[in-house]
Image (cartoon, rainbow, N blue to C red):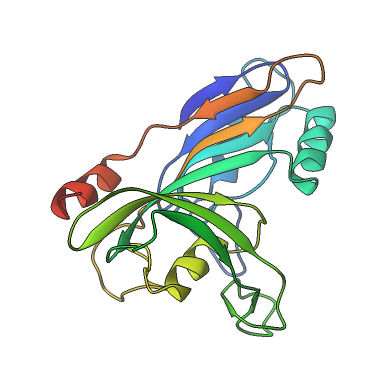
Length: 217
C-alpha cells in the first residue's frame, strides 16, 4: 500500500486494482479496511476512509487521521470542493477534443445491494468534463473531471457516448482479459483554510501503461 501523501490530518494512498475499500454483503475477500491499522504511523487510532473508489479503480484515495479530519474532508466532498482528475483508456476514437457529458443516472435495480447504474431521464443529474490527450485508430487516452459524484458515473457516461473503458466488464466488453483502465491521477484538496491547496498525484499502474502500449496510444 503506497502512501503518496501524509500530514497530521490526512493520508493519501495509491490504491491498487482488485481491492475493495469496504466489505460487501456476503463478501469474504480482503478489503482495504483490513490494512488500516498498518497506516497509523504512531497515532493511537487508525485512519478512516474519507470517500471510496470502485474495487478495480486505481489511484488517489484519501483517509482522515482523526474525527476532526474526517468531518472536514466529508464537508469538502459534500460541497464539491475537492477536485478529482481521472485518466481512462477507452475503446474507439472520441471525435471531439473536449466537452462535457450531461446525462442523468439512476440505479439499474431496486436491490439495495446493487451499485450498478444506467442513463435515465428521471435519474440524478450527472456531469463529466473530458479532454482527449492521445488517441490511435482503436483507442483513446482521456482526462476526466467528474463535476458530480454519482456511483459509476465515469464508467456509465463513457459507455453512453459509445466509448466504454477498457477492462470494464460491467459497462463495457465482457471477458476482455484486461484490468479496468480507470485511474484517479490527481486530487486537489483545500484542507487548510490558511494554506495552499494540497495536490496529491498518483503514478499510473503498470497494467494501464501496458494497455496504452498494446493499443499504440
